[in-house]
Length: 362
Image 1 (tube, rainbow, N blue to C red):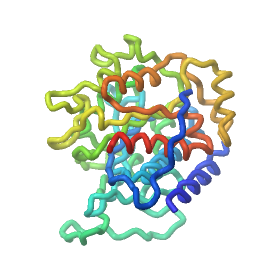
Image 2 (cartoon, rainbow, N blue to C red):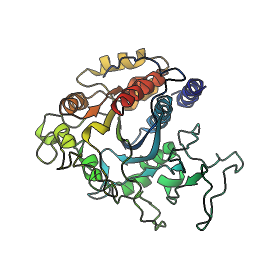
Image 3 (cartoon, one colour):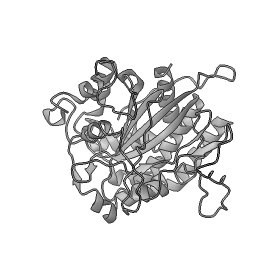
């Protein structure tokens, strides 16, 4: 049934689009009776937000939804899912621009109902009635097993779906808030990582006063996803791409005296080793010509050809060497080809990445 649900999501996602690192397939999820132990992860997504890329945003949101379904096939639940710009900044600070309202049951499992618009909110879509459970009053004792809302407030990144939020931030109003840019692919992640123990979801309206950190104490793992359809500004081995005087892979596998990743600060006395942090670039091919790149993309079934107007290969090899070096130094990562992620083989890409993550979390 879950596999059928995933295939239905694929069909729905590509009906809305109309508009290279190769991955290999893996075995399907274990049959009933052999499910892996349940795991919970938090997710931080860094999205490239160039102007004029509206036809990519729905594709990004659709792939994210499919990836979550892929994780569920391997008994992995997502708890917190936040989005930040890959390059854009607010002054010298990269903000969290989206945070999915998390629903957690008293058993600790995330309970999320995806919507066809790419969001994962439990609130009804505009043409539905309000069928959600009422939120308990602060003095109510929750019933064991019932879902509890984690209310993070309002604002475009909090009340919009993911696709709508991304569209907002590639427009004029969004760029007014994201008024600067870094040219180092890992710089925003490095800055955010040290601040996740207190980072909140940015509210452009300025009406939200909630100062609670969005992320929680460490779960079983932490997933970093990079979504980009443009060329990388520098290569992984370039000095221009270094973070604190070292390569990005070395920076993101450095540890403290407790052997926890030193770049990732989460609330409370918690942390994760680099081996429990999963980096997943979903990006265009590197070091190929545009003609080669376009040919590969168009060979993917149901790839939206119009997306090539705002996509390009990268002359600089960043994510390929980054993942190779990351693994060599004890970290974990997996490259997904963006052309496949936007095609009708996106379900395979999502399941393969989820299978890799499940092995990491064993």
